[in-house]
Length: 211
Image (cartoon, rainbow, N blue to C red):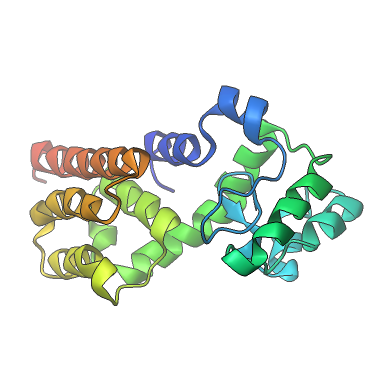
């Protein structure tokens, strides 16, 4: 498991923090863009199956609530789906998921899956400090593990740098990624924070006594 510092960071980035979540995001929301209806810590119903919804949330949500949320499964954001997604937000507004529950689901269900995906996509990452791993898990939780295409240049470079044993080049790739979101200061700040987190991990490794 990645350090608590990293877990708290991802939860805050994805929910806005406990106060914001409780006031604005404790009901199913549609963030817009390509996202589907989202619950919890960035859990996108549009990108998941009903079976995954049941497996992930079935311990905390009753069958009726799962059935209601199931109406949003597989519906992703697009101009054609905009009216449907807006209607779903209205239909599902009676569902409230407490912050403690979303943290529990994230840490026990979602996080282990994404940590495994991250380690598989970036060979050699497991040899680095936990803060380095946490920064990469945050990136993958936000962007996935696709490494091909012009928007994935930096992610390809990160994979190669880690595999080549040159992790010192990784923080700059996080900041370079900001080119993709010139009008999204929140994402730019997140990439900067991940870059700093990765560097903290490298600094900790450099300071560790040699056995």
